[in-house]
Amino acid sequence: MFIEKNRYILCIVLLLCGLQIMAQRQTSSPFTRYGYGDLFTNTTVYNQAMGGISVGVSTPTQINFANAASQAFIKKESFLFSINGGANVRHAIDNGNSATLTSVGFESFSMGFPIIANRWGMAVGCLPFNSVGYSMSSSNETVKYLYKGDGGANQFALSTGVRVFKGLSLGANVAYMFGTTYYTAENEFSDASAFSTRKEQELKTHGLIWNLGAQYKLELKEGQSLTLGLTYRSGQSVGYKQIESLTSYFVSTYTEFQKDTAVMHTFESNTDIPMEFAVGVSYSYENKLLAGVDFGLQNLKDLSVYGTKDNKLESTKFVRLGGEWIPNYRSSKLIKRIPIRMGLHYADLPIMFESNGEFAQAKEIGLSLGTRIKSKHTQNSLAIAFDFGTRGNKSLANSLHETYMLAKFNVSLQEVWFIKRKIN
Image 1 (tube, rainbow, N blue to C red):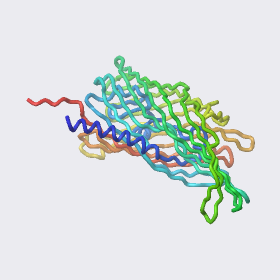
Image 2 (image 1 turned 60 degrees about the horizontal axis):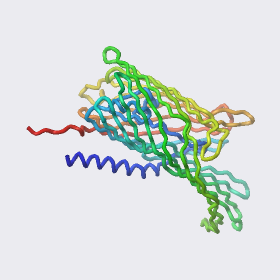
Image 3 (image 1 turned 30 degrees about the vertical axis):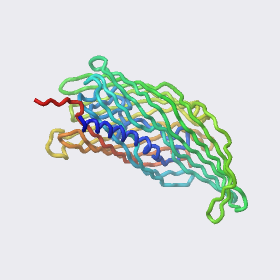
Image 4 (image 1 turned 45 degrees about the vertical axis):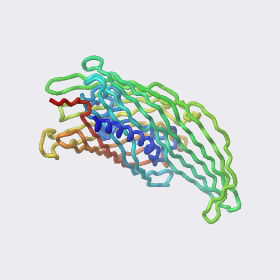
């Protein structure tokens, strides 16, 4: 009993520590200058290796925040703990200028457990909502313009799923959003006698968001099954506090000397969260084969992002296709128990570019692959995923374009914690 209590305490401490670690994560991409930057999908490395399919996918050994209904399938007397992280390398080209950017960090911490065996499950976790990370500059003979963005919002999420009758489960996610995003714009003059200026904007996000999910699992013959999933998030809003300041300074022999800093204004308001709807279907055959596809829509048009309606933002859609094949999950040889996961994904980005009077929406296309290594006798595992893709729209000359490689990892632990031991 003492050991089990310590396990609970350890997981709670790790989750709380995750709040601070996630606040330090970085995203490096000039595309994050627009709207909310990169919006995360709440998929795990398990899903990401298969192109991101998750809406119609459920497995008792994985926590799936993308569709809360899947928590109903968490196994009896089991406790799941998961950590996700990774790194990325991006090469961006804009109007003939290019740069290679890298970032690394943890992304999410979560744990799941059954409330009523094989009927009602629950998960809690620290998840990213969005991330901003860019640094851009331009200059002429007299002044250099610098633009930077950093930070984002996280979620402390509670997810629950209930099997209402055979095959059908319903679920809901409720999350508290928190985090700070920083934007900086500088005018730096080459004349040492001239005062340069730096405008800094600090946006602190706070508020509750929610979404709903459903899954229906149809058992076929010979260990085969078909799972249909739906998720829906209505258009919502959360609060934020904005603090703006203006600093004047001059630079002498590479040292900055500040003249004064003034807080221009501070106020609180609301920012919009986009509506999202997704459907997914997957086919599985015992522990040998899984294949699925997701399709979804997100409405960002006319969205107010921290008090600004950006007319360059557009509604988006996405398609994800992927699967998993395990040669022989019962084999005594490790190599035959290792799954092969692959997938493709396509998505519109919410950014509309203009070049010489022509308009085109940016797009993202990617290929993913990955695997998992686990013990034959436990469900504890290490999973990895790689994602190779492009962003932008090459139909517009000199518009922003990016190629990237993402490497993700996941550590999953599964323990049997709810058995009451008996001594005869």
